[in-house]
Structure formats: structure tokens, C-alpha cells
Length: 105
Length: 337
Image (cartoon, rainbow over all chains, first blue to last red; front, side, top):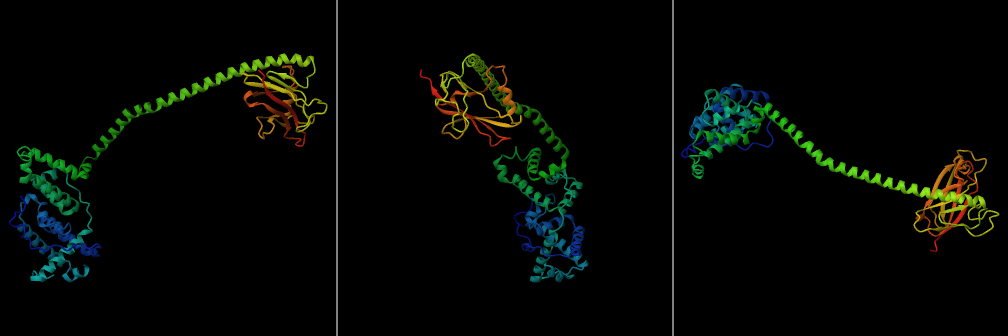
């Protein structure tokens, strides 16, 4: 089974805001840095992060992509958070700061 | 971004911004990662995949947005299959429990959700089967179709040709009999004409000899004498009538000079008969003694010769456009009988 009913609401990662109709211009080097950072993290984390951001899936939906892991919502939430922290550190190493992200968005 | 994790409202905002950035940045990434084969996808969804199959699937799911969406939909179907509601509906002992049945259901749903995957994994066989099917259809259906379409058309065409042939043959026989009859009557008249000069009025059953042309339109030729017109009495049952006249061809008319012969009815602008020939042809026919008539014959349908006044007009069309028109007037009356 996927996530249990008890931890259905255990998701402390904020929902992504709706994607704008016009995609902001992200510099090529920043996009390459993001791809490199994604490739460096755990494959399951990468799937979950992309599902929760790009496909705007809920945690329960994203769990269905990795059925063999048998993770609960809390486990997925914790995994995603840790992966996002790792990704953020990786991007910082490429010179991408919060102020820069705000400017691009 | 700081080394220490953000805290409070600021942390939530920063995470939201970061997620937004990820969504925007990842949106334009190419989605061209090779898709796993059918066995790998099946094993992954059936939770029976090997370590290698799991690695391939996670790699593909991490790179292909399309595959993530498809797997998510399929996973939802599998979750429904395992639900208590579904099991109760179909007494799952027969439908869900046996692994073979579950795999069968997964495969059927995959064929619906991943048609591109099946086309991609067996392109050669797909094309071969399609080509063979098309060839079979052509071989089996096309000849029958052609037979269905062409045979009746050929029958209709043959029938039309047969009818035309019969019609031509029948008309040819009728014409030949009429001509034989007319020629026989002309032969009989020959002796009468040669024996005595033509009368101003002569009644014949089928041949009218127009021996007295007028010099112009509606005028009598000098010396014509009588105002009585040559009269043709229509004979019931005779379909064709013969007019015999002797046109006067000017001596200076070149052999290729064109002449028009018309039969007109008084009060009607359009002629009932019109023909064109050369001076050379007219001379040849008039001087031909083979028939003994010494004139130009016109064979006209009796139906065209309603009672009334007519004239045969001969006009030179070339060489001497101002030449006078020769006119041979006559009239047609119904038989008294």
C-alpha cells in the first residue's frame, strides 16, 4: 500500500504556486546547473521533486511513482525536504542565490 | 540561499520560491529519454522488478515527464484493482488474486495507455502485419470489386452496341429497299420523259421532276408558260420522296466552285434540306447517263414535305457570288384517297 490514512496530511513542503502562462527566462548556465544538481541527488528524490514541482502532483500521487519503496507520506515528505536542501546547496555552489532566483521569477 | 536552513515564514516563502524556480527551470527540459521496454514497465508496476529493472525505471521516470504522467495514471488503475470495493464487486479470488490475471489486466491497460510503447518496441512486426493485411485485402477484395463494378457496365455497353448495330442494320435495309424502289420508278419515268416533253403539271406518286426552273426568287422562267406548279402528291405509307431537277451550271464556274442546294417551304425561313457541292460534282452527275435521268436527285423524308408550296434553290457560293439563284418551285398536296 502507499501512504496510510494517518499520515495523509503529513506534508510540510509548501504547495507550488501555479505556473505562469509565460515561462520566465532562466539563463542557460542556471538551467545547466540545475540539471547537474538533479543528476547528483538520489533518483527517487529526483522523481519526487519533479513530480511535485513540474507535474504539480500531490505527495500521495507522487508516491504512486515509486510503489516498490512502500514509503509513507511522512517518509516521502522528509525525503523530498532533504533532497531539496541538498539541491539548494548544490545550486548555491553554482552561484545561484535566493536573490537571483527572485530576480528570475 | 544560506548555509543554515531558513526558519519561520521566511523559510516557507523561500521554499515556495525554490519550488517555483524548479518548476519553471525544469519546464523546458527536453523529454527524449529512451523509454523502458514492456517487460521492465510491467515488472516495475507489478513490484516484481529486478534491481536493474528498478534502476532503469527510476532513471526513466527521473528524465521523462510523459512517462511520469502515464505511470501515475496506470498506478491509479492498479490501486483501484486492489481496492476492497473492486474486490467485492468481482469476487477478487478470480480476478485480482491470481498473479496471471493481474498481469493480464496490467498489460491490457498498458496497451491502452502506452500505445507508443508498443509501436516502438515492435515496429518491424507492426509494419509487416500492416503490409500483409493490405496485400491480402487487395488480392481478395479488389478482383471481386472490379467484377462487381465492371461486369454490369460491360453488359450495358455490349447491349447498347448491339442495339446500335441492330438499328443501323435495320435502317440500312430500309434505305436499300427504298432506294431500289425509287430507282425502279426513276427507270420507269425515264422512258416517259424521253418519249414526250415534260408537262407543265405532272403528278407522280413518289418522284417529281422539276424541269422548269425560274430565273430568280419566285419568278417563272421565261417560256415556262403555265402558272401551274409541279405538284407532288404525297402517298400514304411512303416514307421518302424523290425530287429530280437539272441545275444549270455556268460554263465559267471552276470545278471547285461551291454550290448550295436548298429546299425551302414558302413562309418558312429555314430550309428543310440543305447540301453543298462543287460545280465539278454537279456537272458529273448531270452528265452521267448511267441512270438515264440526266438530273440531280434529292431524296427527302416524306414527313418533311407537308402540304404547301416549296422550291429547290441552287445558289453559287464561290466564284460568282452575284450569280442568279436558280429556283425550281413545286407544291405538295395530300393524296385524294
